[in-house]
Amino acid sequence: DTGVSQDPRHKITKRGQNVTFRCDPISEHNRLYWYRQTLGQGPEFLTYFQNEAQLEKSRLLSDRFSAERPKGSFSTLEIQRTEQGDSAMYLCASSPSRGFQETQYFGPGTRLLVL
Amino acid sequence: RKEVEQDPGPFNVPEGATVAFNCTYSNSASQSFFWYRQDCRKEPKLLMSVYSSGNEDGRFTAQLNRASQYISLLIRDSKLSDSATYLCVVHQGGKLIFGQGTELSVKP
Image 1 (cartoon, each protein chain N blue to C red):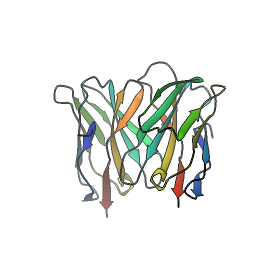
Image 2: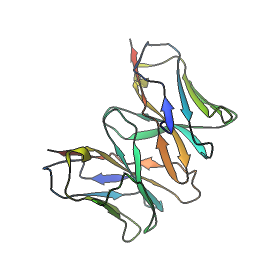
Image 3: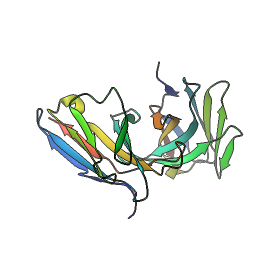
Image 4: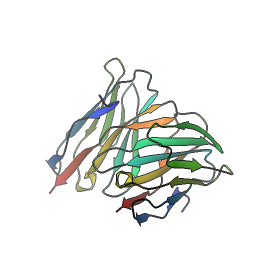
């Protein structure tokens, strides 16, 4: 399977714990994006990378959230001191860098539940 | 006001019906436009891009009116397998802005 992969697929944690999610983009894609989706809503943009550079962060990305893409390949999204409001599906997407109008391909998501 | 607004759902239609989804966007600088489909508890998948001249893909027709900042999707001869949430999406400065989605349920 050469699509976007995410790990883990599901995560249950207690409030206050830290969690980290991983995303592996499609191999030739330079751009990588993180979105968050809550029940009954469309996905909301969090941040994106061009290779290893983080180019934009949404104001939704509080200081408890940090994303990295150290070698321009896979990316991690860490949430520190989780809150119940962080419960959502976290989606990763990737696209080639031939222009901003390139289609973004989504991974299956990581579903987070904070108790 | 949300940047991308869609018709509230759900839409419940019989097989074979024609169904239309409408969407408006607020930022006239939006660069490109899409419809994504999302099945229950799955990731969004691109259904089709939307062009100013209108475009068709089988039973699906998408229209864009830049002057009115309005996007539509028409599904003809709906199938049971069309049941999903349809997301109107605009592309702004590298990121996708999604509507809240409209749920479609096609019944036998």
